Structure formats: C-alpha cells, structure tokens
Image (cartoon, rainbow, N blue to C red; front, side):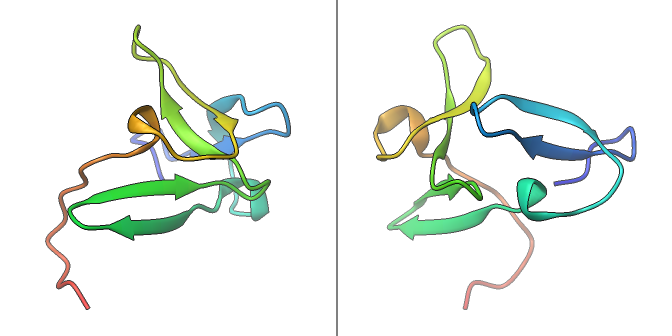
Length: 79
C-alpha cells in the first residue's frame, strides 16, 4: 500500500503499522481474504489489520472479527 508520501505501509512483528518503508518486502504485503461484501487484510505474520475505537490501525489479532473487516472500493473488475 503506497501512501501519498511515496512510502509503503509496513507491519512489524508486534503488529505496529507504519508508513515509512521505501521498498516492498514481506512486511509491506497484505493478503485480501474476501467474504461476501467485506474483506480482511492478513499481514505477513498471520495477523489481521484492525481498527481501534479511536481510529488507530494495528495488526494484533490472529482471528477475524468485526474490527478486522473492511469495505474497500476499487475501480478494478471483480474476478
């Protein structure tokens, strides 16, 4: 995921999310897990991106719950 700053989002082993990476490696890759009209984003260490009540993003959980699923809009054709 590329930010406007030209940096990539990265997740470390503790589940902390930053936007400071200059290149793509395993920590900057996400796997999309689709279920109906929602998606969960799995990080390289098997945890899922999650949004806290105060809006912070982290990847602390190995299971998917309500805070680990998202609606994502794209102009790409669904296959």
